[in-house]
Length: 541
Image: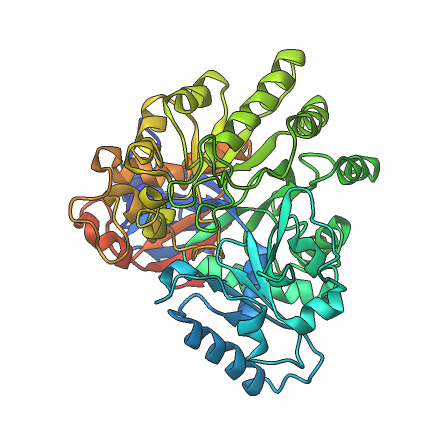
């Protein structure tokens, strides 16, 4: 049976046929792209005709880096993304406990706070959270995911006191008396996670279902997601099992390419010993690169820098690996044809990642890998050149500008900031760039991402003319990052990322034409329909 989409403005992302008006689908694949007249020649008695009514259809949108399970988890917990003061934060947590009738002793979890949005720009600590409750263990995660705050009850259950040793690659903040103040950064966060009750696989599946609905509502048909360490107490096998069951039950409505966070050699060896490998799975759920996190975030001042922070002299951030440890992990994966996706926000972390990647490629040049760096924020000219020289994919999140443009110059100084978030420079160098959101750090609204990349403004329209306006890119370049660029990062450019005969019938239909409207209005464009295998998974036509 054929499904025929007609009367559209279809942006194919193919250079030889950029715009068409119709596409024909059979058995989940595209069989024809072109004119209404030719498309309708495929019509048979049982064919379905879908009228696009002149709307813009684009290839199914791909988020090249997010955390789907974290999104699902955060949707069940306290959303602190809108709080603008310590008072509001405390009220939100207190209200959640009351509204959900949470019993004393049960954990209370939240995510999304950002001290830079507070009237007084300080992290919440144990003493602030003790004012909310001394009976409930509370853990609230900063928006970036690289710092948490807990109360005294949580510290008690974790067995953490002034005698607890610091964690390599992390930090337990102390107050003036030498007592833990409830703030944990980077690798130290796992000390709290270990005390949180383990979720079962059915709960994980329900979280994933909720999260995929959110992604579908933003027109996303495929995600490249970091999930294997997202559920406290669960190992990577259990998260993989949850995805396998959802796929077998026919409840996966999006395609997922797993960026496998396996932070230690023990876990990485175990992954292969248990029979997993990159490419394991199918077109619904597939295992991808080794995900490694080398540093933290700019907002939390844990991104690892070559020079100290401008607004915190003597602070260079936190590095979670030694160069030798990173070399070993990258080489082990590379030898087994496993690409890496290495989280690097600070420039020093990026230099370390390139060093490890170059060593692996030079020692084993015949492997089929596509190494990548995730975030790529604080760069300089040498680093920008290294992406092309080392043939490394840049996973960038344009929506980060919404917050970061307000803090980057304070954090690292005006001169250093000029070579940061330089996506046009990467594209002009011919670097493979894949766009995403890092959701739930930011919402997975692709239109917000395209808007930020094109205008270089925050969502309120600041600054006039855009920040570092010479780094603005075109709408087509931004859309490419969320389609073909992202598909390349998952070795899938031959089956998705453009509207072409033979490819998967994944499409996104938009309410307005983002190529024609004013760039400032792109952020308001809505998704009319999200289509997978030719079937509408969200919205309507």
